[in-house]
Image (cartoon, rainbow, N blue to C red; front, top):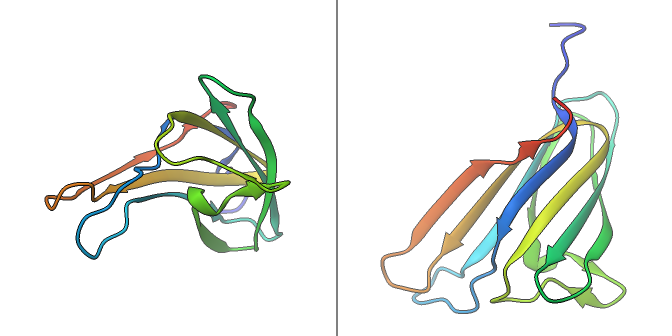
Length: 125
């Protein structure tokens, strides 16, 4: 459908937590899935906010036109700093074009692993 808005430019994920341990063959992890339905590349900035330390801001990621990118939060890095494991945090995702953002966590700290996925909260609807 032409003229239809496909996504938002500002998203929030208030509950982030990279599990510090894994059991079995599955590694505990989190991912931000960014879907770009636009006809141009999305320049995305990811920021992480913590309870007890300064934020890690403006980690740049590109998502090419009409593509998706599954970004493991453990891989996000800025000036040698990463989001630490075992520390609660929140995520802000900002894009120069509308995108759709989903968040997933695989917790394999126990043999009965848990998978959680949810849509991020769009701020400019």
